[in-house]
Image (spheres, rainbow, N blue to C red):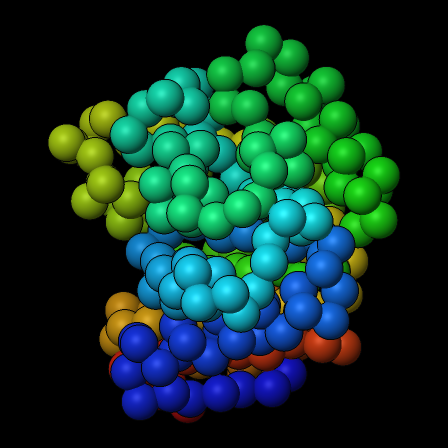
Length: 241
């Protein structure tokens, strides 16, 4: 695991964007695994700027998002479908047909999850997976547990995740209690992984995910066993290293 400690959020975001852009320049038809949340916003902004400057072309890229709230319509302002459109997709030349996000309103969860895995396999697997990390060490919505799901699945969100994500909703009671999430094995099959973390509230999780032990109570710790991981963090997130 390569650890890059940047002075601030802006430099961290630019570093991540350069890695993603380099992947696309070297392989225009790259398959990207994408993340949502507050942390990747700066990276997406930097990638949009690079696109506007003619430095990167997304026309052949295929994307798969990590997760989506279950039971939340894609048109909802809080859905990850809306997030990706507003933060990234509408600003670049990535054809909509080449973007994939789990369907949080599906009537058949099992079929949706199996189908999502099949789409990833059919695309050749993930070339580069972008990840954030929850304050409890989750990646995607793979929450701390005695056992971790390996494939795309329906997950019950932890109380901490619900509290943390309530800032995006009118109240905590409005936060969905479940989500569809790509599983740990699917994440680990990505040929390259870039994990971003910013802020003091992520420092403990970063410390625990890099301490030399794999622990299912800190799902991100399994990334220590991956051959090609870049951890890009700002100084606040690195405070306990």
